[in-house]
Length: 518
Image: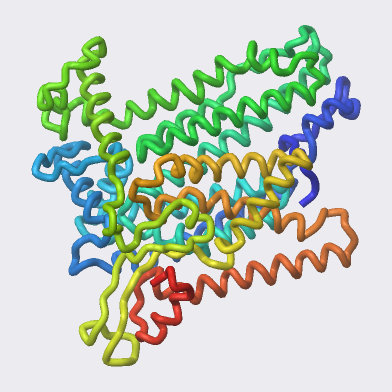
């Protein structure tokens, strides 16, 4: 890793080909690596390897050919959508409590491969593979190192949470994909803004007003709004990242204007950047979210399509008919979620609270079969199970990584850690608001990419600067290599309970490292 501040891919130059000024250099920072073609091949090779592992025996295990765990909710709903043209309509099964997008994506896999494990898990595996690609590119941009981008990709492949969620017909891996894509757009927007301000500074018109220049249309920020709308179209918790990334991009704008030497950067942000940010991140995300309900709006028989009439609710009469029905339906579902409390003395056996998620102290058992009906382990009595476990070599370092990131943010003004912490906090902190609610470890799926990005930044410090001495760089490379090897070995050990391979009861017990895993 070479420096804290990044620079767009092109090298900055001042007027008439002169070297950039101090202001320009501060805005542009360290350039991206010039090994574009090698970086592309590294990205494609690692992503391909990850994709093969995600797809490996994807249709296994099932519950006698039917879905397992919470797949039993979403897979039949996706099949209904395939039959109906994009919406659920089974009034005998009222538990339709999430937006439709993830189930529509699952329906695409079922349309291609049928109502089987491969069909209902295919698009989840594709989403999990795309997360590998995105994290590689994000880590490379954050660290300005192709090597560290590759390391981040290996860590994503070897994370048990992202691996198993990529092999389940559930919602969370899709939300993680769109959240990570939105984060990538926010980072690209940051670099683009600084490049535009550097151009203004180099040409001498950045300071024509004390508020700084207007920065033109920002397509990457618009893209972030689209991705956040899609994330919310998976689960309503996507709105937390709408708020978090909206605040993050505003903070980036203030910092960029201050670095450019704008006399009044905060007022400049309020006058030049705030309204466009509210449009791109706020309004666009809402419009995209509403668009994910297209089939529901177009139908007459979708679940609760006429909720107001069915329930006799006469409120919100000022809203247009279909929108009013959606709002009332949404409020009803939100009430269901908020009141989904743990019964006194009768908790769900795999329930967990958010303070256990960073280290993965209470994983989830998705599937378990044992006995002589299971063969393939070399004994008459075998165990076949899948369990959602975050690879301990990474997840058990979460608290030190978060603490180090907070220190770097506060005392070193390291924007990279700040950005990663914002993404992580948006997926964790809101769950502390209603601790009586039933919660489960799979809610932490979108945390995994941000944990890995934080780990990669730490590994960048251990690796050392590109211009460090040969001994320092060699020692750093050894440490990074040993740690990456440890993560891979940990993942290989967990592999049987991430893919449901038959194992002996002794091996099953050896996989359960902590009492809270049982």
